[in-house]
Length: 417
Image (tube, rainbow, N blue to C red; front, side, top):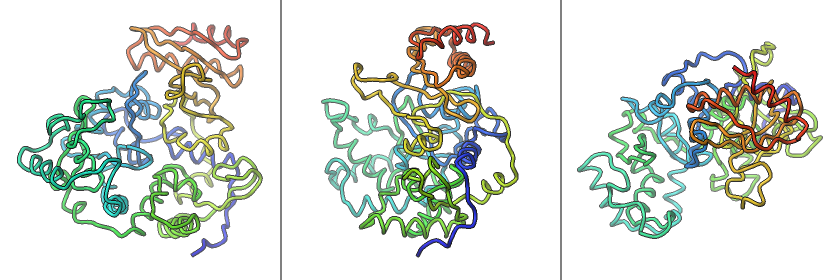
């Protein structure tokens, strides 16, 4: 069914501030710089994307740092994977993500889709799956290496039969990953990890979608259908057409208790056509905070290219007027901004970017791009703070664009504490 007519109209600035507050970048939060704070942050954003690239640190660490400040990296790892009672698990959301443990039942819709499809990227044999399960039952949690090897002997993507089988079992929910060791997944049986209440819950697809719509709305403040699809990749609905997807997600948003709103004007986040108002839904709590007119302090920080604030490039462009893209997999001679470009958030805006690297105890800003001259001071602050967090005691500037801002950035950096 269609949503009722929206009674609230939000401006582009309303949406930007609501998103920043929802993501933990605006205003005070109760999150501590500890394992507990990381767990609270994970529940607020709903999903933290995982990636193997490590420049300053891996992305899941950078996401926590950007919101919490210099929480120690061991505390971050402890929060995700080494709590005495698991707080999180890994599964497919926006991409491969670490998710709050209470979300497990609501990915049942995706597990059912995998089972209906019948295969992953590779064909998997029932015999190998049963051997993997038998090993886990008998020996407890194991890595793919302990199960018999992750690779078949070729390139990294040339998985062994065991790796194919255990990943398929992860897809379908017969195994779970709630721990890592040395960046390797540790596989276990759900009944040894999950509480009875989580293990015994198998919600139908509409209930799963309503729950995840609520998660996305709390994480972004306000969402369109396109945002709901992107945040959890809910295009994996098995819908026959875009209209089916829209109807299913409209029903989900209303079932989640979200408030229908209109996003007004050109450049509004979520509006995919400039100048056209868009139907959207707001989290009731975010809408109440916006109505109260609370402003609060904006974080000054570097953002991982895999941060949920900027997952959706269209939303990022419309909300911040900022073009974001990851160039790590682009040939070096074709890169515009660098290998692992991290946007700079300051004053509630994305005002620059840097491609960082580390050489011993020096953070190297290989290429810095500033949107305006006044971004020099926050960039200097962000570079110094990031350097200290990863154990560097110096920052070296290389290429600065535009070149006329180089002296101002260098001066700001020399004065930064």
